[in-house]
Amino acid sequence: MIGFTAPLALWLLPLAGLPLLTRWLRASAVPRLDLRPAEGASRTVDHGMTAAGVIALAALILGLAGPFLRGGTAPYRGNGTNLVLLIDRSSSMDDTFAGRAPDGAEESKSAAARRILQNFIAERPDDRIGIAAFSTAPLQVLPMTTSRTAIAAAIAAQGERGLSQTDVGRGLALAMQMTRDASGLGSRAVVLVSDGAAVVPPEVQDLVRELALEQQVNLYWLYLRTAGARSIFDPGKPGEADTPQTRPERHLHLLLQRLGITYRAFEAESPEAVVEAVAEIGKMETKPILTERSLPRRELGWLCFLIATLATLALTAARWLERPFAPARPAPLVRQP
Amino acid sequence: MTAELHLFDALAWRMSKAQAGLRQGVHRGRTRGAGEAFADIAPLLAHPDARRLDMRRSLTDPLGGFFVRRFERPTDITLHILVDGSASLAAGASSDPQGLAALLAGGLAQAARRGGDLAAVQAVGGATVLAASPSARHAGLGEEVRQMIAQLTPAGSGIGGLVDAASALPLRRVLVALVSDFNLSETELDALLASLDPRPVLPFWLRDSGLEEPPSAFGLAEVRDPESGRRRTLLTTRRWAARQAEAGRRHRTALRAIFASHGLQPIEIRDSIDIDQVIAALDEVSL
Image (cartoon, rainbow over all chains, first blue to last red; front, side, top):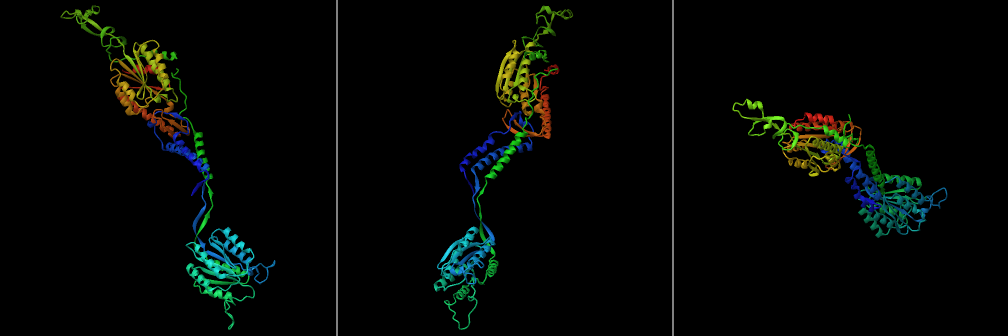
């Protein structure tokens, strides 16, 4: 769509018809043009000059009106996915993988996750990404968008100190709801980044199950395991207590496995392992996706002025080439002997 | 100014046919009377002029009748100068067509006066008569006519007015001098000459070498037809100039053929008047 910064100038456009009424070159009188042979080249030049005049004026007036192409979004088929990053904001994320407060040598789990996720999204330009966080309550940080700057800022904003609780069940529900905004074509994925879990109440389990079936999301759990914590894949020794209260991570894993959707869990005990896991997720979530590309507003005034300049140059050249049909040098009336 | 007009004093035209007319002039007359050219012999009773008794014829007449010699009474004619004053008369490059037409009309009027003929002028542009003067023979007529033609504003297009004026001219005792640039199509010229037809006609063709053969320099020339007002931009090249000149030559040849088909040979005036050429042409032409 074309817009104008000064649309009032368009009222001058009828002036562009002036070259149709007047001529550009000075005329010499030559009787009975209809009896003289007409040539195709001359006719072309004739029409071309009128056209150049009209174009020059019209382009000038259009240029004065300041045309621009409105920005917008254009649908575009890329390779990627509709991705919701569900980030754990519990306070334990602020510890290092070793379970200590971060010092200069080791970064915290959340800092490592942020850094790795930033790199991850930077390499995937076609993804539509939404961000949700959870701690005491789930929080939608950023609805699904293609804006890279918004995504990067939203991830960076997760650097604030976390809260105490871990409401992972409702966080999952929120993340799955957010995938409703996904584009029609393309897969949907939720990446849960957390270092722990909590008991998921039965009603929330039902909600998560329903949403998972409805949205058919691919679920990835990037479990940042602190040193010493039990693995989610470890079934435990026989006779050992295996309840959601004692081992919430393992039972969350079991719950997610039972959802009936593509699910994969990654355990990472170091930033390197996180990088590997994220790369693996990236490989699995590269599918055709219908996304949109934002188009910036584009000024077209220069184009108008360029056209006007070219047309004016053509008219100037015509003036430069102008000559009378025949030089007016009347002979004396009576020939002198 | 008048010096140029006097160059035309030597101009004379001789009519091939005897003209009916009573007024004294220099052309062969059809009436009998006092003159220098012998016409015939008539009985004295029929033509009672004893001064011109033909003694030889009377004496040898077996019946004893008396006969007199009769002479052609010279008479005058009216020179009708018809000037094509359509807008193209103002268009000239190597010539001044209006000045030429004015000088020619004035000179012809002057010559007519000198030769004892009357001169009438009509300048017609398009469908209107732009200027006219009745047949006259007074002193200063040439200059008057010249001024009249020089001061009119050429206007109009087509030959409608000229054809009307030509048809309205008298059929006898008249010589028509048609002064025009003959920027006409063949059919138009044919119609114009046909409208003049039984009358003796002296066509003066004002030609302009600049318009006929435009220079071949490369460039753009804007032209305007003074009659139709149509404008056109031309890309002038050597080839274009050659084609224009060639087309002009072909057109003039065709026009000459039309003149010839009416028994006429135009007196072509290219850029300026060559009096000697005009006099020679008038000597040759049969009217």
